[in-house]
Length: 149
Image (cartoon, rainbow, N blue to C red; front, top):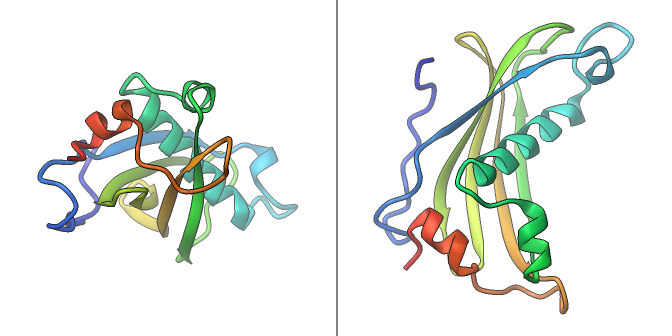
């Protein structure tokens, strides 16, 4: 699998971030419209799945974070759709952390079909307290994952 992006880490964020992550996804009928083309919102679902698996591969998961009083939510999103994916396509969803702040983290994500870029997005995630629904500092387990100091 080739490296598709050349994202750079914001120097003020951290010294080291976790490695790039890729998730293979197959397009099923439920992902498409009547013409067999992936419905636009499903790219965002694929990206969400990839971010969740990025957490899981490091020993964390959304339910554990929720149980500990932390909720990760999409704060801001910018998405560009370049080309359509189709029924039965094998896709590669990338996750690259590009910036980490006290309560927010920015991901650059891309959807590839072989060497063809289909969709790209910048996704900013906020860390919230489940009790107050207010921003909170990253929990220790996530701070270690991204080397937040």
